[in-house]
Length: 148
Image (tube, rainbow, N blue to C red):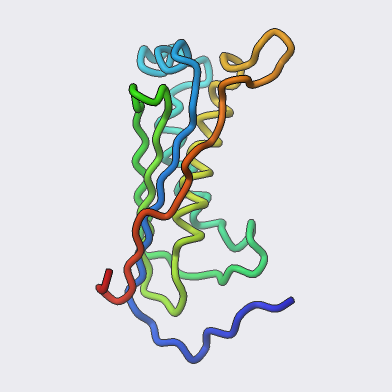
């Protein structure tokens, strides 16, 4: 096992966009909308948690290169049709390697922060999560040196 040698690669603009969803009970979605979540606003918490997750990606993935991230943008919104919260993260860096893992980590980190904030409303009588799930987490776009 080893970290891949990227020393021969040039520094170029790298960008990745990832998104995913956290399915929730309709009642929980309504609580979020009305600002009735005991821990505070899960959507704001998700934005901050997603940014932190992107920056901490090499600590989560041991073979991922630590890179200098130029920007992270995490958008979090309620998706009525899916009874879910959607997170979309855009990560940019002038680097020798891609930023897909950072974008994915941002999405998952954002959605896990929502889950943590609302978990008390999602559990059933036996403490299980019959509805709650992370779904469709994926890279939707990546750019290298301005070429999509």
